[in-house]
Each structure stands twice: as C-alpha cells, then as structure tokens.
Length: 329
Image (cartoon, rainbow, N blue to C red; front, side, top):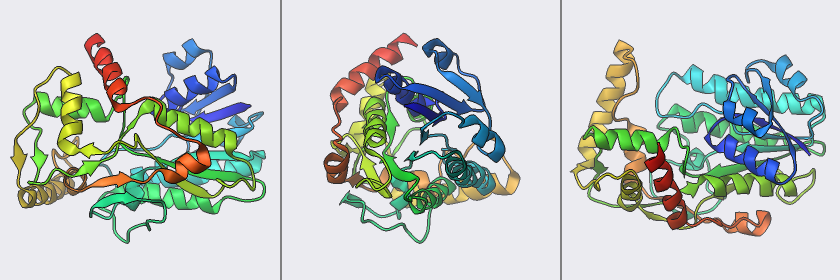
C-alpha cells in the first residue's frame, strides 16, 4: 500500500514510517516541518498543516490508507491551540479521507482520554470517558477519538489506538523533561503511595499501528473500536522513573512532596501562569500531580485478541536500548 502518515517525522511517527518501509509499503509523510531522517529513508514528504483542508485532500492523492499520528501533546497551552491541532485537525483528516476515497484510517489516541483523576487498575476499553478533564490534551484527544470512531462506515474503516506513555531512543518529550527536572533538582515523587502505571516502548507502539493497519478494512471486527496498547508490565511510578534516570546515568529520586501540597502548588501555578501569561509551562500542574499519584494500567486482552498484538520488546530490553542512546548523545 501507499500509506499516508501525519506527523511522520515525530517520535512515534518515525518509528511507524520505518516499520512500514521494512514491510515493503510506500510511505508519504505529511507535516509542517522538514525532517532529514525522512529524506534519508527515501520517504516522500508532502508539506502542509492539518488546519488546511484543501491541502490535505490534495496531499492524499494516490494513497490508500492513513495513519494519523500528528497531535499537540503536552501539559500546558491554550485550549484553542489543543483544539485546533487535535480536534479540528482530526476532523479535517476524516473529511479528507472521505473525499479522497481512503478506506483505512488508523488513529493514535491516548489512554488519558478515560482518566478521571482516580485509580484505573486493569481496566478495559469499556471504561467510559470522564465528565471532567484536568487538562486540555486529554480533553481534546477524547473529542477527536469520538469523531474517529463515529466516522467508521462501509467505505471508511477507522480504529483508535491508545499507547500509554511512549518512551525509547529518540524521545524528544517525556524522557528529556524527566531528566532535565532531575538534573535541576526539581524532580519529586508525589504522595506516600507508589501506584502502578503502564508504559509502552516506542517500537511496540509502532508495531501495534501496523497490525491495526493490516487488519483494518470496512466491516472488519476491529473497525470502529479503540484499543489500549502497553508493555503489559505495569510497575510503580518510582520504579519506572528511576529506570529512566538510571539509563541517563543519574541517581534515583527518593524525595517526595505531600499530595495535598502538590495539588495546591499545581492549582496556584496554573492560575499564576494564566493570569500573567508567563512563558513556558508551570513546573507543576494538577494533571501532572494526578498522573504521578494515581494508578493507570490497562487490560490489553482486546489488542491481543483482535490485533494479534504482543509487546515483543521487553521493558528491560527497551531500557538497554534507551541507555545506549542516551550515552551516545
């Protein structure tokens, strides 16, 4: 197939592109920037914005399937910036697929679309969307996922994947931020509990997208459904964080901040940053506190059954790869 990948130059997008090429597919990447890594792979790059509907339709020419990875992630920013990229952008991708006669659309979602601020322990895809979100990212990703699943039809098959806390070599987001906080002496564990969380190695997350792409077609059992994607190896927050720090050659974090203090600090800092339009992002937000202080791990039985997904690269093997990469940069 000729597969159109939005955000193909990003962390997960690039892993998906590499695996698509390895399987013999032709790949077209669509994004605003220019990425030397894609040029080196011989990938055709069609430059454009998700907020340009006509450009999207033209860019989809001669493609048969779409993997929509591009999104605005993060813990801070205006609602409009998240809505524009994640909701309106996804709406435009769906419309472009319908106009261009695309029959397969794989969407990258997030388990945070069902996080309600409470513990989620071994839950499956029947877990409902919450009535309230603590950040614009999960709120807008939930809106986009709903649109993706509702767009499933006899002519356009859609599926939504929810990879949780993606990490690995080349990570420009989670790992660098964690390491930077540790080096600055600003990293703390939250509360007295040490809840379990799920994560996923980037190559495993990419593999799940290819499995879904290969099984997806109008009327297929996976069409119109969402799937959690993880390592299926939940570990405590401190275990995971300290694995990352060890890979970076840093000592483990042991200092903790009381939960109530963290919540209050997050609330105050959010208010101050909004009131005074401060640059950057707050060092603490309520969403961050919630992610560090609650359990969020998931039952991936559906992904195993319907997609044939298995986390082929173990957490231990992935951490070894991460350590080698971090030593090389």
